[in-house]
Image (cartoon, rainbow, N blue to C red; front, side, top):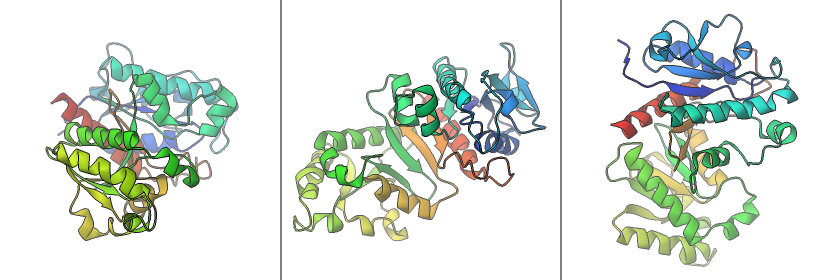
Length: 327
């Protein structure tokens, strides 16, 4: 039986020329009885034949969801052609994100799940001022700092530094950044994942976690002191650990989440273990936000082959996190 007590999750359209609309509809068709959603976008961009209803103030999206897709409409400048981004629609993509955040702030939805955007299109055609979704949502939420987590049943991992060149990582990595990241993750594991005493593994930056300084000084000078300080405060924390021995099956049983030092150190293991099921989670926001862990996939948009699994997992996780925050 459907759980009508669940608050709906707002699902943004993403770039309507990508796979966002079709995987949202596919996810809704599988989840509509148990995990209601509200799709935020221009209904003209939905796949042909999608049963939908534009919501008004008297509608209950939880009831509507079992019959058709509830839609909170955003008027875009143009129709969408699968695989061919329309420059005029860039501002609508931004407006959909802003409207979805407004819905979370007004408690009309339990959380937010964002479909993939093209940062190139937004920067080029809408003067988008942010490196990506995470930073934009950090701005909209008034958060001091947001942290990106990739989550699956097999592994949860957080990169301390994200979208910067590898050569810049050592200078970007600081005691303040690392400690703040671990604190945000520790709090989120309790609040959003329901783990009372989270066990956190922290990777080293260099091979063999620096080999006592022989292979780099950052592990001993930056990472170890932060780990020692937080252990003294009572955190269940391991590290710095050699990254090449952290992610096999036996090692993963010893922790709930891993903190990596840079993008690929975090994303390679989770995409190897859970390529289709990984979920992007933004921690540190005043509202719940998840996203499928893939891009717009313009090359397959409209061909009926896009896999909705990551979107399904993202909606389910957003709903579960919202329930924990409100319990």
